[in-house]
Amino acid sequence: MTDRDVRFAVRLTPRGGRDRIGGVGEDGALRAWVAAAPVEDAANRSLVRLVALELGVPPSAVRIVAGSTSRRKTVAVAGLGQAAILARWPGLGL
Image (spheres, rainbow, N blue to C red):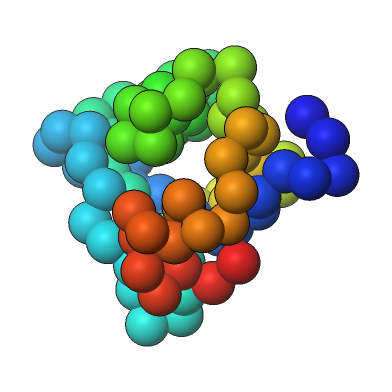
């Protein structure tokens, strides 16, 4: 990851039934639900895979840079510009 990574906030709900992105909340954070429980980093790994899949990048291009033990996380994505991410999720606070 580099200084050119795009970072944004994610509000994660573990044990959310299925892995899905629910859009952007009023606070500008991406809303995400994963089926995995927040045990042994399973929910975080699911979030990384989900964001990578939604953006069409490899999971290695996505990482959690803050908030690994909380519901609100900061995610960094390498290899995409802000415009590409905003096109996918308008209103995201970058």
